[in-house]
Length: 400
Ligand code: PMP
Image (cartoon, rainbow, N blue to C red; front, top):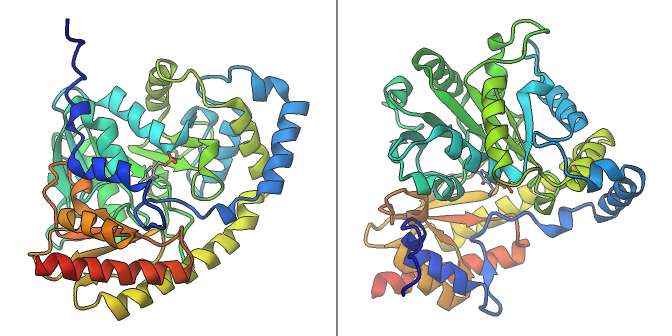
């Protein structure tokens, strides 16, 4: 008897994914494809001390099953950190997740039926597309930076709107204040949940951070004794500001949304690691994330500048791009429409560099004109060499 086939969304894995899986094995490869922080930013001594303290002095928090919704003290800490003038966040507004990725997965579980409509910023984060694929949703792409973009029309009939306003993955673009306000007011008028996915919210290199849409919707919690009840579902994570291996993220939303997500989490992993949660709580209390942030910003700012300088030298005749004001990525669009970036990937790998082609950020895999380049993982010399290799790959692609 043949064994049952995989659910068909799993067999969707396209050629590009297969190429990525094989790429990890190539010796000397300069990986500019992922979205990884530099391991040198991890405060290893501090985290070791916090871990030892958590296990020795707080074994019930660290080693028992944690409450599904997260340790109460960590939920209080997050509520306090994200409260703003007029925005009163309570413990009931917060749940802890196993990374931001789990929050995306749980949102798909509680909000999507088969074939539901999602209004998603385009191009969209690959992890979100993966998380929601089992429901085979229909996507309405939102080109937030287009002059004629109309959020109210975009939100009509959608189960939710998905955005990454700070330095989007993959484009690195920032959604401006007016546009944030317009998205929020459309969410309120049309009664649409508005997901604000914010892993890069602290990574501003050139200016002070813009207000979160969560803070802009402060009027939804006018009184201190009533928890926030607005349309924003805010997703945070420690992955970029402390360490991704802790797998700690959080959702801030109306209490009814938190209750639904907690029910879904029970059927997923029961709880986020108590050890990681205790480390996180103590790291916040000790001001660890605030202390290391300036070094992270200086490191990544210099790498962004090095990448963009190398691109100007070696890629200006092949691609156009904007210098991102934060985050981890530069999005480069081929000048020549004949340069198919799916075809560029194997050519780039042959030259010893890996980038991500735009097709994976399009639910229909159709955008083959751009690439995402990461600048946080490699030092300036490697970034420059990676760009040289990429230019050679692009030229040989165009000749073929
Ligand atoms: N959302 C976006 C837009 C991301 O770029 C990432 C990380 N690549 C995540 C969510 C999830 O990150 P994590 O699960 O590590 O918190």
